[in-house]
Length: 298
Length: 314
Image 1 (tube, rainbow over the protein chains, first blue to last red):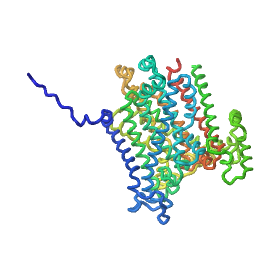
Image 2 (image 1 turned 180 degrees about the vertical axis):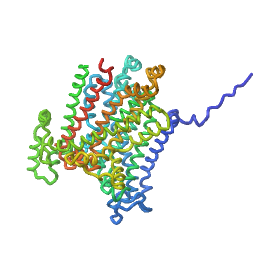
Image 3 (image 1 turned 45 degrees about the vertical axis):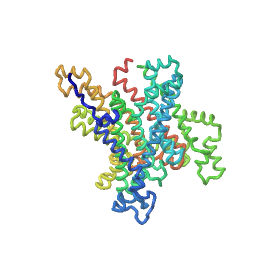
């Protein structure tokens, strides 16, 4: 009688869920995740690692970076380090809220349009109409009516991006509703709502999740652009776009007003894009390359 | 082929209707009475009533909407409250810089993006490829207004090669105009070139895996002929789509970059209109940009007829 010793599965690989292992295999995705984690940590710890972002010290106007003011001061003597750190908070809040809101609206409309053929035309024509506006132009126009506030920025950007989510969801639903398992469920007498909730929705989520990281990045960028133009969040709110708007006016005297918030925006978006690419390869190996580039573009 | 063109044109109608409606609804989204918001907090009740009548806001909502469609069909966008002239005139005054900037930027985006993408695909997974793609991902991550500010800092403030801001109209001479547009056009174009490069690369890689490419190689064609003659032609189809989309994105990107460089184009017009609550101008610019956006997308769709025989024979 012989005993075969089976190699023991390593405890460490077992402890991690499979998707995490796959995601962590690509170094670029990990780099993206690290960058994003850094931004989250900064946003959470902003009150600990920095001072008051709205405190004005007129005696210290436009001071260059020093040991007291690491990133220098702006034209009314506010500490740029504090404003950039608190700016991370605003960017994450806006990005997260836009993703939630545009997903709620976009997934809802996409499901209805994809599942009920009769509503498809109406819903999607409205979405097409909204998408016929260039993103930033529609956001500017909406801000003109809504007035400057953080909530309104979120609403305006969510209106701009929900049709894009809806289009992706509808595309998946159109495929899923023709599958045999949906047919089987229907034959068994499942009601529409239960069918959508239990079978259609879970199966159309993965392309939507991929879309999420790109919507998040687009929301952060759009908020910065709106605030930069002076039609976004009110000027006293610490936002990267707001700091850049001041930096533009003092570009010859105070380049630090552009460099630091600029670096913050770039690293955040870069991290989101890296992570989004990794997520896409994990969840959607079929649609690598072209189609996501197009989604990113529109 | 005719049905394809007809179908595309017909598909535009409902979209145009939604666009016109959204532009109309904008003015009613604000909480409270639009006329008193436009008139500002200091206006008297009489002023508000007069303004309300001038803008046609005293009619019932459906009547207002029908009037709005009617006026649009006649090409009448109303009068600017602040500039005291027709909105169409205000827009025409500002079109030149925006149009030149966009065309200049798309030329840069194509000139940089397509070769970078093709070379990346040709030397797939080489160091050149990876360097290009990291650069492209960085490019996608940098907002155009930020790149513009960095350009001003570097090339205008430190090196003094270009004016810090401002625009020289064509009447002052073409060279001056081009000089004033170099930095903004690069700020806009380079960001888009990153996108074009990524698409061109993916498209090339897809095509290079096709059997006819293997066949070409098998019959002894040089690598040069395979890549630049057979593959490139086919890879151009998705690339042209993205160039069309890029062009549309650039029109809206110009809106932001104009503020960076103080260029008196459509972007400055809409932003200043927002700050003054000049709704007719906001509606006009929004409609105008959306119309251009739709026409470009139509042009892209129709360009398939020329480039891709598969669409022609559908």
